[in-house]
Image (cartoon, rainbow, N blue to C red):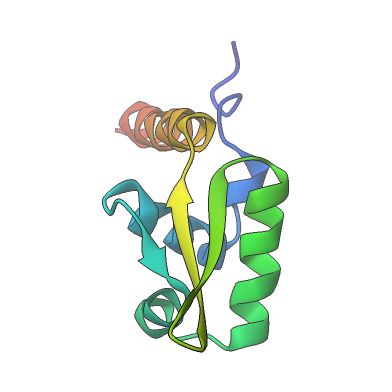
Length: 98
């Protein structure tokens, strides 16, 4: 098995890496909070969450609070497994360099 086999291409982008990092330690996070934490635009966040949702790594839950739309994100089981494998692969890569 190669040194970088478990590095997941979907997590190469810093925004997707950030989204997954936030969601792995929080039960769920809403759109505005994610946007605020990552300091990115609405469009940027929407595009990257869509990519992660298509891969079944995150779950998107849309609802209304009063009349105001609310979008919440949470990590799926497969997303958690994929992200943990990715982090382990990075850690192994770093350890091999020392």
